[in-house]
Length: 229
Ligand code: C5P
Image 1: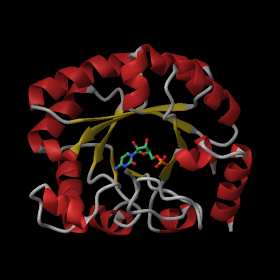
Image 2: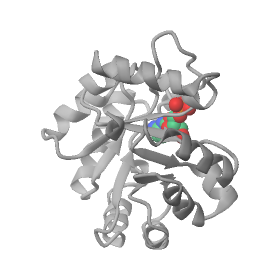
Image 3: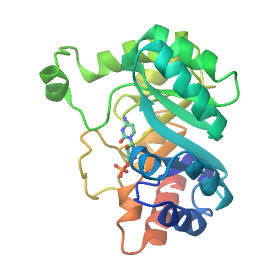
């Protein structure tokens, strides 16, 4: 079950991140380094997190720029040695194709479709009048056609994305995981772990529900219990 679970290391320092990894390796197979930690600590954080015991390291930088710039960044980041890295599918087909080529098959690229913090009215306020689901499906198809190894999407869209992909081999990551009755924080489109897995997700990202808990191990036990129910 830990293989399906990813802890988002949304903390300020590499020391805090490594302490969480050491404490949580029994519960999580993947540990995610996001923008905050990467910007504060630099690429060496990938090695540090792995040395602390992370089985898989997920670098979630959601790269989004012109194709050449993203391809160069992906080459540099591949050298840092994560297992998974995100680009933003809003960057378009050419950007994703070039990014994929830049990995030289050494790491798995995932395409972020629509952030789980955005709902239809947020999308519309940015000039995107289609529904989150329609945008997600369009971007998912583009990412798969560009050769990416998987996608990140909200739990609400995961079953439609799974159906759209028509096969099970790709990684489908869902953030926005909340235990029933838990705080939503800034997430808008959320689901319980069980709902997400039933819908076809195979990697669940969870951050604040564990990091801010008074008894994080208990939250993990609840996660396991819910998943095996
Ligand atoms: O604390 P919480 O469980 O909401 O953490 C979710 C993690 O997933 C955060 O690190 C966030 O950056 C990330 N994420 C997300 N929505 C996406 C892609 C990544 O919330 N679409």
